[in-house]
Length: 433
Length: 162
Image (cartoon, rainbow over all chains, first blue to last red; front, side, top):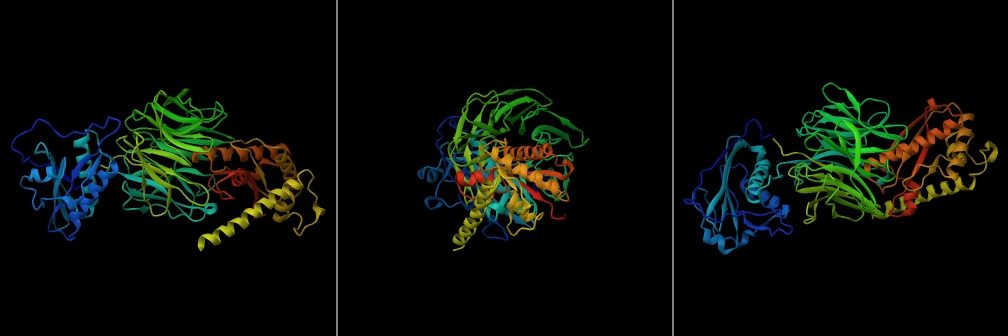
């Protein structure tokens, strides 16, 4: 982790005066023109791996390209070769290749420590927009690239980034009738895949806590399927609800202190919440139907969930302590798996009409419904930490298996996220600390 | 090459399931008859699967019993009372056309419907356990209705210990 041993500081600006027009991308516009950005290889000093500095630049370029908001320029076009970050770049050289932004950086290794410095330049204004330096251990070089990506994204879009984050998901292998499912963890760009379970037990729907070090999930490991907790650093597991009946569809409260889930008794499934410290469990709904897929609002005061109390599954909202629920989905078809955006502005959902499964968003009052992608068979949305990107899985059905995809909240920039095998049930972590 | 082999294996399996379903349909209206013949020893698991029918099927997004399902469950109840040494698990399943969470709940609802029916026909509740697999364990794998209808099922699985 970066936490303990890391230090960040600002690099002094090199540009002598401030220019008037500063590069800024307005991402609230519908159709965003990606910012042309040049990211020449970082300068390496004393690196054990000579490719190390270059790899940092490549990861930054890859992150920014995937966001759809930046267009990294082919390095073959570069005129100036950056060999130091202590002098001003030759701005005319960068203007000539139409770069609006330029990132220069240096990675210095001494013993097991890395110092990473970068400067973000507004090419047309000829000024430094941001300069930072970070100190960390050598094995954190990928995180350094993600943190710098976030700093660039934040400075140019005015929104928080999401690159220094992880995704927990279900890795799938084997034939469909006997699918082997393992909990797995990776960086948001698909790197550093690590398996958290061995595939002996069926595991489903992992979700992150706000601390990003703990997940909750459903497992068939013994007797009735139950909701569990796992610390992803230590691997330690613990059962959440040990009541008779199956517990499923868990999710943390925003403060990480409670887990909300469905508990099945007989043919009915109702919502319950457990306080993780006191272990006190409270019933939130009491119906003869299926209430499931609960998700908290980011301020923790409300819960969205799906219920078939009116016939088909629809999305409802109620107070975090239960009580009257208000239906918010009224379109044609069935609505399920509501997930509140970390910004609080939208709720993402899965919508089923005939045999089509769409991923969409709507406001918490049910207005502003927008379908982001549809087809057979999309499911299980999860939000990037900044509420800008939605990840989901798509299963073509038949012999094949599901894969992970991302799409912007505008419905643009749909992209596959490559995984070692089939993958489903993604859940995005908060930004790492 | 592997793909072709896999497909053949699956097709065979699928045919087996279909044959079973048809067999169940053919004798659905006759009561269980231990003298009906076949190679399965009366009271064996094979007897239960072949001569009684271990599974019932559901309509899309429904947990209501069809008349054919009721006929099968009548025979299950009869058989389970004769061979009362068995405990068993009712597995509820859903087809793939639903979300993961909802299908887990739907499978549980289907299993419970079967349990309630068997209990109403005199099978002791303490012999029965239910579990839902949602859409996690299909028996037929394809992208159309012929498979989906096979997968929307509740299967009565006898415990092997008896």
